[in-house]
Image 1 (cartoon, rainbow, N blue to C red):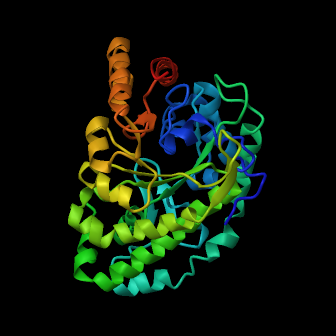
Image 2 (cartoon, one colour):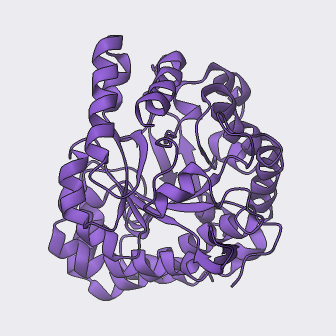
Image 3 (cartoon, rainbow, N blue to C red):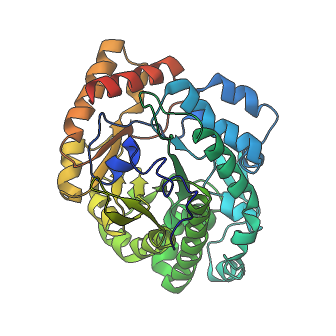
Length: 381
């Protein structure tokens, strides 16, 4: 499917942005930077806006979701925004009983850890998400409307790209099998081996649901898509490749057929696909396999240096990451040295998007994030 002419990529508003170029494995005037889970983790204006509003209610309020998405872009001058959402939003939209409990995370009305429960869950048609996604489409479009009229820092034209966001099939399945958060994801890993048929049905279903959720955001206007696998790091490489990777590939397939028409420097017409990023926590041993599911760029957490990650994913893959979030509270000279080290190691990859190696800690001083952005733009030139 070719994206419509008004899409930011098709219209040329973001197709040559620092972010999109980096995801394509190209360098521009400086290294782009954005932060995962940025707004809700540190900004006082976010906390003020969220008073009295539950997380999923905020995600499904288009005006609120758009404003929360825009807050860190305005404050920090980052090169991209990440759409404000949660990985369980598509589950909520198709009628699954789930809420996010403060301090705990997603909690379901029941666990889906056996064949009978999974059969009940998978009886819900994932295509129902398409009709239920109007709040998501509106929120993305509201955000894009403002981004398209605001030039990014340091650039005289273009717009700040928005990144779509969805949870990977395994992370969704891990929560569903347990009925909530788990430290070891034992229910999911047990189901994987004890009942491969039920596990396969669950993964196929979560793959289609989250893939449709990601596609909705891209069609509505995001310029890239990130699949976030919070819990894949708890798996062996063999289990990941056999029991998880096919579902992640299926989810990303919902974005891979989305493309846009543009021209190169000589004016020749080109058709390009929407860039896809795959990030996981604790996935150092899985980086090559995560690339193989169909990622243009691989996000790396803080445990693996970027030059080592570059060797694992191959020479043609862009990297994203990977400053240790703990360093945001370190003395300024220590933080600055760490930022420069990440930038140096990131030169091992054809393209590099600076980010943290996980989410922003809630106690972070927002000024530290702004300082990082300024240093990345200066030292990454």
